[in-house]
Length: 121
Image (cartoon, rainbow, N blue to C red; front, side, top):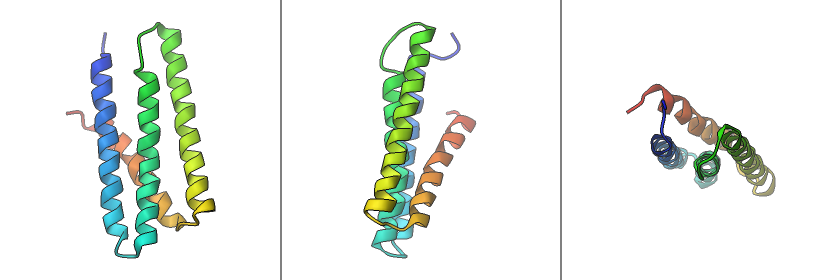
């Protein structure tokens, strides 16, 4: 076995914590432009962290064969996209927060995925 469930859980937790740290850092950075921009940036990044947490919860929820694992990954990915899509609709449509800050938060939190797999600790 190349990768264990425990190492996958640790990696998922590290990614989620880094995404939440990015949400806080962006909120502080965008606070210079105003509280609505800070809230939008933090909400965009937090959406990605919440989606990643749902994906990890579904993926590492239990043992099973290859087919069951694939089903868990796919259903977790669908949940992740529902949360992100629904959250963006709420952020941009219902609460009318600044779109540039929200998209910046979303992209910055997704960049953590690339960095986490590039630099294994």
